Length: 366
Image 1 (cartoon, one colour):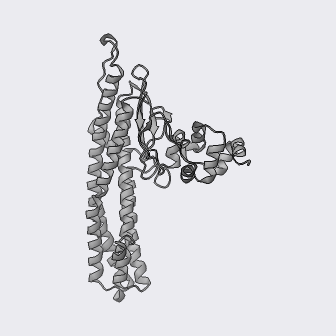
Image 2 (cartoon, one colour; image 1 turned 180 degrees about the vertical axis):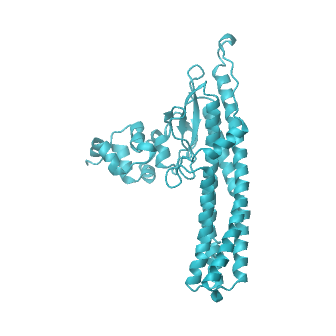
Image 3 (cartoon, one colour; image 1 turned 90 degrees about the horizontal axis):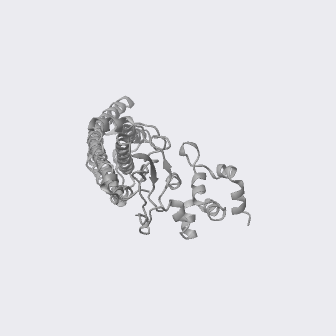
């Protein structure tokens, strides 16, 4: 991994995680408006006296009101995402400048190559952010940012409307329906449907920010591909790291020919540019973040995991996979590759067994 590209990128990811938390909090004001809107509509209308036709008319008006609130939230979030993307593109360009300068620091002036990074235009960043599909695997995979956010908002609206309709047909009082939606004071309102909406908003915001930061970085690389040969995946090293990100950690890809974060919802992984040989230099002594403090920057997730206690390995991988990891005779690199199939989708244990029967034989022969 290159220096200072590694240092700058990891520090930037730490900054992004803090930024995500701040942006998540912006949803609180909109959630309060949603809560107030639902409560006022249900207090004004005694559903027990409603016909089905009248109920559906009320539900339609509630959904429209919620749609307006979510639309306002989308506009605010989208504005923040664009600002973040533009900042990330500018920061990545400055990082490339610093990396090239430092890579030639010990060369005589006559051998130094001049370089000034290109920052993509704001219009280019905007277009890329909304035209590049999210890299997450699963039901949201391949969605564009607009659809990713708006589909979530639609689900949240329908969950509330569905709860009101269900409560009506089950003979619940307005107070009971409101409680189902808001939650109970005894549980600090964490047991209501709006608490689910809040948790889902947190996931949407964190994933969206990771997406726009990643897109901005890749657009900057495309604009400066004359000095780059590829990029390296870097995952946060702790017990929450997913199987996909564990296996991708430390893997080098060509530009335009590999996965991009976010690999999943709430993904914290990042990517680090790899300079061409004439600009690269050794990165001895580089460190990266882990749950137990700084570690060698060249250490991949599975290299690091081999140094951890058996109990922690079992917690992260599950007992069966952890036993294969310890006793199967596989290198950290091979174990990482074995965990992912085509399109970087995690493999099941049965699929892994078919690929490495000898390793399973060694691991479980006793």
